Length: 448
Image (cartoon, rainbow, N blue to C red; front, side, top):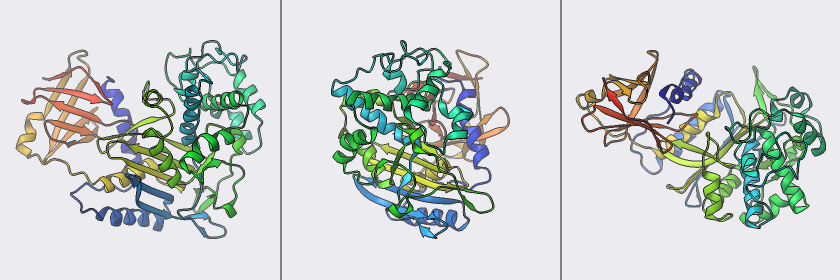
């Protein structure tokens, strides 16, 4: 279990990023149709203030329950974006690549614990790095997107041979499997392994193994943006929206090369995570989290619900796709221009849709949970909880105030945008609290 000081990093980042933006609407009991009006209103406000362009879709039990698009796919020609607009999805591509790797494993063409020296003998530590470690960002291979060379050359065609040569020259960032650290190089190499294994292109494999079986008719490996084929440009904002120079997707094979629509992404993640593509054994491995990373998936907690998916960014495109299995709910947001952190936007939309009501608790009942709770394993690790009216507050470093949401049965939740929510589970008398995050429980803390 992480110490509180580590748990709170994400909250502080959230606090800073959200200060100047719209506050989340506190959830209330909603009639089934009111979330459409509220989400429409939110997106309309973003659009009116030139704060966001993009598309949102929510699907439940395989049916679209909300869909909306604001802004332009091409500002110069005043072409409005629509539900048919196709966007670059950035690192959401990695979920497709991981799926293809597991398909190859299930077809007995690859072994997950096989080292990669036979494919890439010149990559540092290739004789120690396994396919599993590439999938889970535990290889230690330096990410090419951290190299200034990449940003100086990203808009030109770069062959796989040149990319591999660059990656092979990097010194390792750490010994394989000692920790997790995100690296685009991992998934570029996985794409090359797939092409060598099947002796065909990544695009052919994508279509044959995933897109055709799931009827993803608007998902493919991108080339130069074609606005006449319903593809979108991306934009940054500096007094006005300005088209962002597009990355040549030759540099992003397997890591960020796919173009898709929100509807196709919902179909993909629902299909993947309900076993329509891979076996339960493969899905279990994909969802196993170490140092925050699964094998092509991330775990998300929103409104105290757990889902799996991925997010991505390339140029000024940003995408987030999550599937919540318990609710059979798929969510995708893709933006081609935003002045607001899109994580804030998607969190807000999900709150409006889910409409969760916090459990009522009186000011008098709340008093027994107020105090300083000290970890039994580390006396310096403390949780300071104060009360403001009928809200319990986690006071962080005597400076930041994190409100906790009461979920009943002596459990309060700290929701975080950039990390999983943290549960504060109290004893009946309020003299002890245990912190839980992502299924991991910390040492009990006793009130001073």
